[in-house]
Length: 250
Ligand SMILES: [Zn+2]
Image (tube, rainbow, N blue to C red; front, side):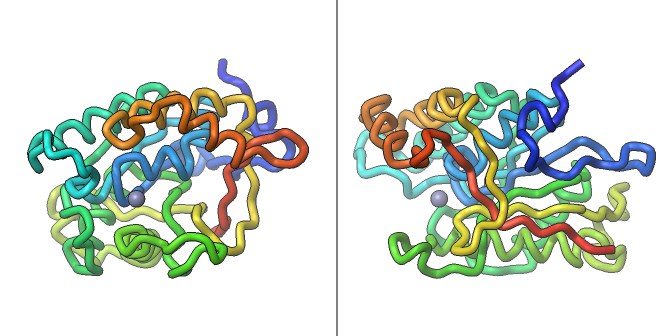
């Protein structure tokens, strides 16, 4: 018997699926690049997995621009980053990572992108979906929100509502045996207006381990992550992942 969400998350915790109503304790994390899911939601994913939820990562692009090291070809980089993402997910208790294979750095809003994410939602049927906040172009006057992040977030929000829930959208999915699905909660990271804090102090070292698994990206390893830890620590010593939470009505 896993710990309850109240034990793992404290008094501010995600919503609980109504299992008597056919809802599942499942969360999907949709990220633009290998490593984004781990920066944005690794701690939360780990806490959910420990509470007995099934968590799945969906990585939209192939990560094929993510190195200056001439030793890599595009093919070896894509394969390496996929392996790193699977290893990171396994550390967190996330058993499956889906790779949608769009080209890194070249993501545009398209029917193909919307359809691919909609298909993942209809197949997995998550209660909650975590992704990039698509709205900010600039985050907290400190970061440009990468083009791929914005389009991943926007297509994911659109897939949640209305595309995945309405049967006349992408009817070919239904012809393939899938059914429509209503996601109940959305959590957006990289927001200028976060409304929901997850205290990940208990699992922050596990989050660091997951990030270090992306060895092609963080060649400084744990030294770099120690600096990240200092940067992330709240004045009261806790570590948080922050989201804009949307509880879907109806
Ligand atoms: Zn990214």
